Length: 474
Image 1: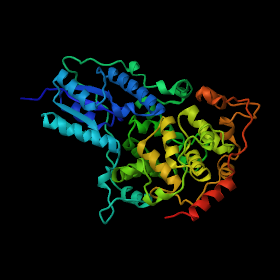
Image 2 (image 1 turned 180 degrees about the vertical axis):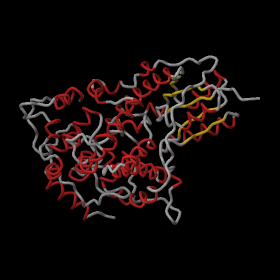
Image 3 (image 1 turned 180 degrees about the horizontal axis):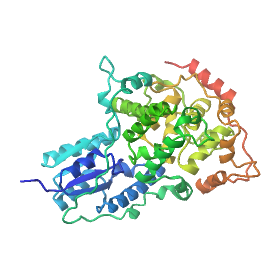
Image 4 (image 1 turned 45 degrees about the vertical axis):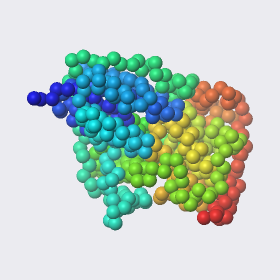
């Protein structure tokens, strides 16, 4: 007999229909496919901006499935396993398919789910798709994992990367559909408060928008990407981190577009490919050393005298974009207005917090997790540890970015600063004013305020950081 029991297609951070191995396998089986999204304890634990952005993405996926004559079943449950069991009971489903993720909490959850379902006679299969190179498939010549990016890049750059899969033309429907929750009732954007209205115009939502973003970048920006990606006042990057974080586009799709651009002689294309592999490297490290997300990757840095008190006035000045250092403040305000931060800005604000202010990188990592719509567990953790000096392949601790000279180099005309800092300017940019609409009211800030003096000058902060490094006890 041919198996006609439904397959539950469990969507997580793979909110797309094209280039989706798990979905393609479910559709190719000829069996009914029931798409499911579960708002469980892990998604409930997300901070404000990532949870809000996830909710938007889930809503867009539901609309895409409706266009295919299918639908997305929404369930809220403390444990995903309980929700899956219930939908299996209601539908008679004989299989659950999903796309693998790699953070420790998700791995533990998925392992329990797979074992429990298989013991009950339910087919449970996980598929690739979030990464081009599964972390366990990239090894050094001695069989270990890579701890430095450049050798990792050399090891994978010549590998064959699977061609992207097309979207299924149709998803076979079950005889009857189970009940579904109402997405709005979950209030996934509640913690964003009034900031959601400010950030929403900057969101490029869903698979179609992500593909358009990629196409525009390859057509008009990739040639100059090598130079322009460091200029925060220039629209020179792909901005695809938002869509990659939720799987609205895949690294496979981006890679092949980049390869085509490189073959066409667009000189910035290889740099773009290297950035895709930098993301892969972050996941490689998170898989092999899960502690990177919550503890110093270099364990000897546990003895370093970082401040861990988030209540200190300098931490609050940093969070509020009121350090008196224009590059730092503009970058922090960009994050509140757009939900993202330029990569050069991320390096500057991270260096300033961990070195000039001598604050633990976890303070910054957690704050970015609260505020970024492109938050990614691996990239966020590795980026902060790289900047702090405690991570793999890190910038040396004694390399302290000077935010003033960096501004002169990368924002000569102050386009970036004037876009996001309103104080003291006659013609205040709308985005600089939007900052005051996005932040919590209790911060009590106004564009009429005077711009603050530096809480720590670049020279004073550098000297303090270097003294601490030279007198370290490890």
